[in-house]
Structures are given as structure tokens and as C-alpha cells.
Length: 200
Image (tube, rainbow, N blue to C red; front, side, top):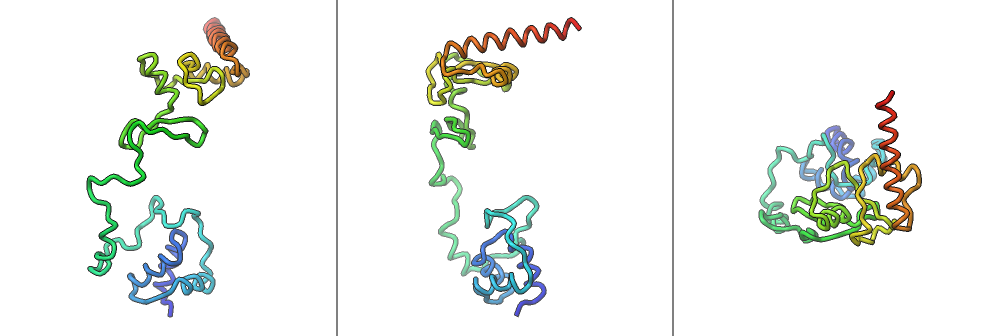
């Protein structure tokens, strides 16, 4: 028998959790044993809509945990304590400093801090080659358009205005020398444009 409180609880939490977990939550909160199948049928019986989040089990901003203010039973504590993350432990999937990977845009990045800070490998290598610290408005382009070529002469520094002009005018080529000439052209065009504005 589903009470109004149980239905409200199910309606509030159904979008965020899988049926099996909801069954456990209901049993712990209301002391009523329900199965995964009963939770599934309750959705249909009480017109509870489809899941609104594809990543089930994830907490979202503003969401109140279903077990807020509740204490864990000794039986449950014994079951789960072996999986607790202990202070000082490192997650098994934690990448060590200096690790590299390819990001979603296809660029190589390198891990530089324990906090999970990743940096574009092209920026990292440019700074190492030239012993400089790049500014936020400075970007590194690959002169031959090859994202895997980190040779010193293939990494070219441009600012955001120059990068915009290069992309807009199609001045980044597979030929290094042509791309570098395009960078010179972009600098000249931007300087001319700014001078024109000053004369107005």
C-alpha cells in the first residue's frame, strides 16, 4: 500500500535515482519493503513522469538529499564502511602529475596540479621552450595544423585578435612558412585597422 507521503517521496526523487536504489530509500525512510518492480509499476499507477536526467544517481544543484538528518543504522554502517574513502587515500583512477590525455576537442593536455588542473600541452611546451609565462589572451597555434607536432618551430604565439583574424581569413595552412606569413599579415592588418580608428 502506497501512502501519500510515499508517493510524494517517489515523485520527488524518481528523476534522480534508479528503481533499485529508490526501493532501498523507501524501505529505509518508511520502513516498508518494496521491490524494484513495485517502484516501476508505481510510476505508471501514479502518473509519475519519465526521468528528466540521463545521469541517474547524480546530485544536482539545489537538490536536498533524501536522507538528510537521518542517522545510519549500525547494520547499514557495517555493510558500507569498507567502501568509505579514508582521509589521505587517493582514488584509483587519479592521474599522477605530468600525466597527459586528449581532451574532447582533440588537443593534448597535461596535468599540472593535484587539484585536477589540466593545461594545453602546446602552451606548456611553448612556455618551456621560451622560458615565459603566457598571458590569458595569448594562444598557441600549430603552424602546420598538426595538433600532435610540438616541435619548437611549430608552436606560434598569437593574441586573441590575431587568432580571430587568422581563422576569419583562412591564414592557417599545413605549410609552416605560409602560416607564419599569415601571422605577420594579421599583425599588420590589425595595426592598420587600429591606426585608422585613431585617425577618425
